[in-house]
Length: 190
Image (cartoon, rainbow, N blue to C red; front, side, top):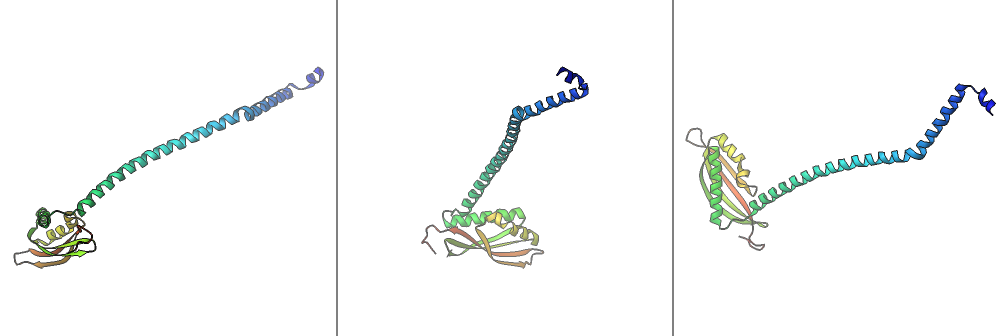
């Protein structure tokens, strides 16, 4: 056998040895290293997905807290608009004060607020007011555009008249405003 080995060229012997070592390394890869490397890759992918989920959860928590605050503000605003003031004279005073302040901010002169009729509309009480004001045309228009912020969404304009005044470039405005508030009891109606 030694003779057979001595007849083999050193290059072929080297190639055979390299082949045997490569086969052993390849076998070692499949038997020893492949499973732990796969588990390591799976753990890395899991860690990345958990980090992304944690980041998304933090973003959702921020959005949720912002939406909670916004819901509370809207709820407070709605309850403020639907709250029925005490006596009716307090409602008229409140309306006159709000309209007068808004008119003064816009450079409009509020010339009168007169209570009108009352009636039941579904489960709400409609309280009408005749409002008159005068001022420059554009200032009156701005005042009207700001109307919802002044009185809230529970008020609406039901009639509208605008006329030129004799006093220079002034315009007179007459509105019928209807305020809606919940009835005190389900069977109450006027």
